[in-house]
Image (cartoon, rainbow, N blue to C red):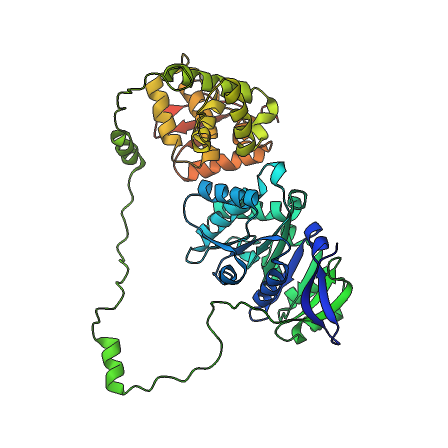
Length: 491
């Protein structure tokens, strides 16, 4: 059965439709300057397809939350940690609920991190729940920028990687990306290039008009077409839309945006005295002004001492034996053995945490564990296991200090830091880029060099090379240093 989404009308009044099944097998790019009607177009697509397919909207401005009242979408505010957001996204796919992921109120750096975590959560799920889903990303240039801006490099890489996965690899997982942007020149080319359906709205800048005409296979002299479009008019092309460039006008929508109306409103009639009182007199309803006091930086060593002092003494356990019939010491030992066995597989280093955790749960059930560690505990145990440290090899107090420092890093970087800490503690040569990349879960030595730069910029380590080109890593918070090691071994 072919499901056609009613977009509106063509130039001469014929109905304009979009093949929904073909859209799910491809991807859609919407482009137009501010005020061209992009959000109206996305809302029309969402409303017309709501009964046919599951939907997820990445909403940076909170414009689409009104879909909840009319069509039953669940509004998810970007609260909690990135792990919480990934888990919620996985549940969205599992239970096939249409959602609006509301990023309103967050700064751009946090919006990028949250969007990346949500898209990764939709992407990294078990094959059994790869149900078809329409994933709409409004203002996509914010999440897949071409250049740096008012955000950290870490946030940009996380967001851009998630957007690339959505547009490049999402189809096999049932994810159909629909991205909208104000300017094609600001959108990463590797993201835009994966779209095979296009709806191009009003555009005035020459560089954007030229790129839009190239994507539609039009001649450069026809680029003026995009400048002459009215609000709500788009040029459509693609297997789900039309085999040739076709001008369409988007139809009306049921729901409305929460944005401010552009209509003129008469000014209030106030006398000069009353206005002066409103502006210059104190009012109990006034919002408190934010403090301009800049917090003083805190030394990293002081933070570590405070963290170490705040760790409470373990309470005596009344339940010496767990419900699976073994004491805590034996249980921890078996869990370490399970992790070591898992990581002996050469491909385990390059699998996602969700896949490894499923394997871990199966192995725990084989060992007759009735209460295996949860996902967050597994994330904390995995970096330590990847460091491959045996109890007899290091002093436990020193190693606990190393894990405490590593806990200040993102989850996926802790294993790299602990591999370096083990080398420094055991006075062995510094690990190569290949070894560090494997601990991070990638085959790219270049990523390992980037990780070292990232941690060095944040004061976790210092890198130096001797006259032979060997690398020496110093961990200032621990006072440890590795022996010189060849960084290119194995490349």
